[in-house]
Image (tube, rainbow, N blue to C red):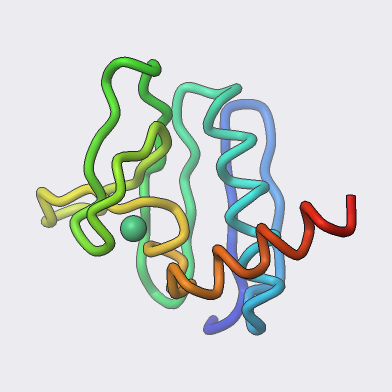
Length: 107
Ligand SMILES: [Zn+2]
């Protein structure tokens, strides 16, 4: 279903709304947090299935879309490229940056 994210990881899982940019940013933070604590996080969103993993700090991968080097990235079956979590949930990098700045200012 579009706009609904299914997140699964060893020992648990959750369903999160992913309609607005804000909801997608919350999803990015949740998935990133989980990926750093699990071996792999499975995400199903907008008809796509992703496997998201965290690398150790020296082994960052480059996002195929925004070209940032990130420690948490996702791949999907049949696609050799890795994407950062913001790009794979469809959150434009500019929006992600604005939301991060805003939440930092609020905190
Ligand atoms: Zn990216």
